[in-house]
Image 1 (spheres, rainbow, N blue to C red):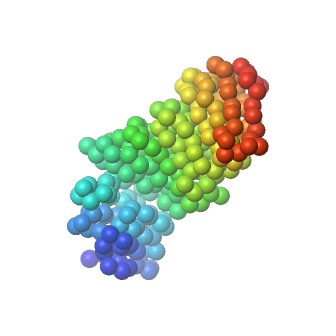
Image 2: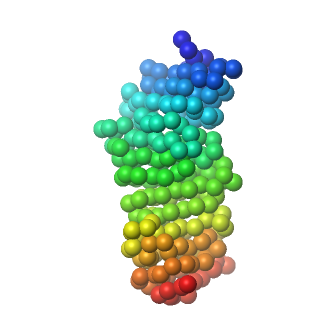
Image 3: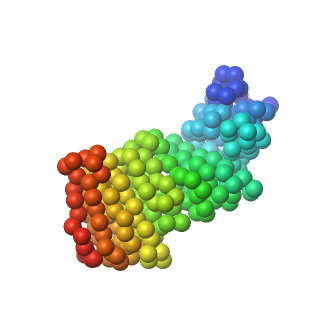
Length: 246
């Protein structure tokens, strides 16, 4: 068979491409978990819990043959590179999607069937519960979009930082992070909770309006903007009520 695995194939197993085999096929957790990955670069690996590292040259497919086992997986569409996308399998309303291998470390859980996430972090389709950026490579700069609410985050999120489907961001986001209303979504709700500054914004903003993690706001605010300290940071920046900032 065109694969080599490191260790036993069980719930904690990982499969790694054979050294010198640039397009080795990798089978991991077959049977109990039904994971399959094809055309992975030499040294790339996939664990039975769905963690992928290294370069994927062409395409990878993973099927959740036993959803009851706790792993619901996806079919990957297209080549897995900087422009790749991962798409939830048809009929799998709560398929787990893993994307951004290595360079971006993105993870999204419970996406609707047909929803997708590209390797640069673009999400399309419905997200049922939440999307989380694991921040495995914070310096890489994580770009994340939830089209349902028009939330855009560009910057480095700390490990465990998350954005849910209502647009709430939790966890530490570096000072360079920005949340911007998606173009064409003039009344997108922007909710931000940055631990670093303790800011919270709940308001309607025009498409393109943004707030950075340091509290800078650009663009038009349609309704009243309120920002309050979250209690976790007594020295948090407090923004004035305003209707517009340049």
